[in-house]
Image (tube, rainbow, N blue to C red):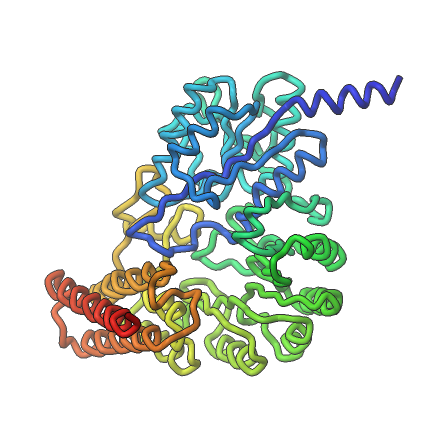
Length: 523
């Protein structure tokens, strides 16, 4: 009798069908290639939610319209024809086009009024008040880490036959026009209790082997959304090496190539204990004969650890340098010095590890002196010798989103004059007008180059090996930056829109000429 009741309960749970939606994201001209929108780990967020639901007996599917490169019209048509009881939307902010998502969701709500719409992710965790105000048809928002909160919502829905978030920690919800915010949810710890994320063949073919070995960061940078998202000032949780390697072994047969990228915001934990864990991971995976990469802070790098990791298959590292200016690093609350970053770069280069620098060339209060220090650091350490890296680091300005500490600071100073309709992104001017001039110029030119590198038909496509044309464009970008910076330093340039437009036009024409010349030679 008891077994029959369990079986009945299991099939009752299965009747609640949850669909997790990765929505289309339209590229922004103003923010092309700006990636500080959400942590990389967000690409596994729906996979983890689906896995937790499935583990607890619920039906859960993922509809990935983003990786399928679908339009909102195509997504709406498919959603209108699909059968589901609860719709979860991993909501990613995509700049000026974000309202198009809510327009589609409103149409869907009108078509399926009984289906609860639940938002989760970094963006809605911070913008929920404005979302509920502008889009009252949204039923609830999961704040922070979504997996166990989502499970509680669906379980309660199954029990009551309707959405009820009243006593569910980690949620904000809309009840007949009134917005309620529940207490924060305790973070998932240990992370080993989570099942491995659901991965589709599409995600594996597009993203490859991605693994999230930890969550959070022991740092507290003012430009980062990681710790604010988890609701802690400084928190890092790591999965056990055994658990990580078990996932990798299950993942390998599904991969086209034996390469794994760790999506952790900080691959290393803090101090000796963190390094000991990393060395254990290296020892466990070295026999798998895989290549791998990860992200970390520059103060995590030491020769002994990198030597062991390289022996285990480490090939590439994204390292958070951010700036070479002591003053800028202080404003960023980075907790790292430039000499420490220099030491880390040399270690990685000595071991032949491909290095991608996380770098914010332009922060809101940067001076020309700070910019010069940054530029000379990048040149001195050969970090401006590849086009795709050069085009990124020579224009990146700090993005100010509500999810980041600096939003509050600049807003309190009255410097966020240009907020979007959801008051999630804030535009600002630099303290020095000369910095503003250089930042705007390089933004226009570098983004144009980056768009060209995205086309498989382009001679400077980043997926192709570095060639003569890429080298010439790279040399030009470095020379342009240096020339304009020198003229600004000696006040030999007019800081007006006409002069800026002239330089932009001449630069773009020169770049197009380099590429066109290459195409003519090939033909």
